[in-house]
Image 1 (spheres, rainbow over the protein chains, first blue to last red):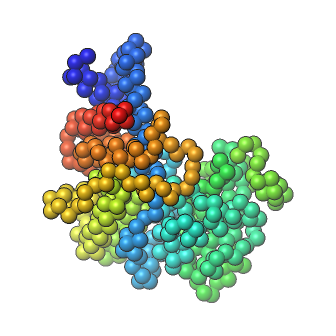
Image 2 (image 1 turned 90 degrees about the vertical axis):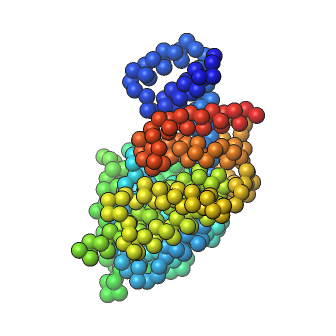
Image 3 (image 1 turned 90 degrees about the horizontal axis):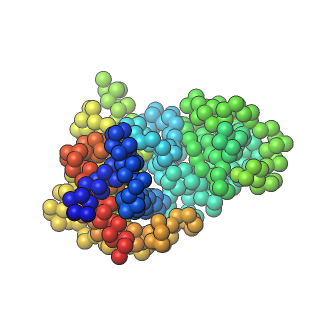
Length: 267
Length: 171
């Protein structure tokens, strides 16, 4: 095999991995792969290398963002007030799915934790290191098992408000089984300086934040606790998407699931 | 008019917050070292915030590609003025503290440290295009736009980059 042919094949295999080959070229390559084991091996090597790089970046993502950057973006009360006008939005955590040119805000947990921290006056400032944060959320929405947020999701009873650290009130509003089969819970965290509505789902023993909506602090006049919870329309839409035709769980079923550690159909 | 501008500024700031990890990953691909990536991230965010405050952000520039281009331009400047530390080939501390997760193993018997070392040794021009396409999921055309190179160059650098890694892994 000449060096030029090798390079050419590498380019074709590479483009194939990236889904950049034309339909015809894919057909041609598929035929070749079937009869050329060396080529097929090369493709697998490329695929492995690709995956290794992605895993490496995923691991790098779990490291906390540098403090200096977080400080840069925290501009104090004046900016926070301005932020609240644009705060009512849902950031959704994209699954690794179809590629798209990212024009809209991409929900990534470190940035969500930061954003929430900025709005909520340092509530969830993190990731700040192991064990430091109240509701630290790692990149890609994974909620660390050591956090109070995990505890709340794992064993909190819906509608019973709980006081967490630093004067944060946590409240579970809804529990349901998603169309995927995993269990999801809607929660609300409130503090003097802000609130967070979130949708988290349980998979492989851990909770993952799927969607977040944050809002301005409740006005001093309103009795936030007494008011019936009204989540943002956008978060409701996220819930609709997950719940499908299922009904939310009633209190007995919820209690049973919690006592069994959420074990039901292998979740 | 001012209100609209304000909303844009605030909105862009929010978007910037949301894409910090994207910028950091790209910075890692440019510099090859986490420490340098964090420094570059900091400089990038500073510059972007200044542009935002001074209303010098182009009206039609979407936040993510603009941020990545800004990051890259900064890095090129830093390279030219030799401000950048020599890239660390492998940083054992990089993955030492991360949460234990059994499935987070690189392919085959390679540790994450070995993958990172191999990645850091690649030419930067191969690293950056590999990160944009394989990790961020950009198309060739989109990567070409961010990097300001022809699509054919994207294609060949990707192939060469992957080939480089394969040879390195085999060692």
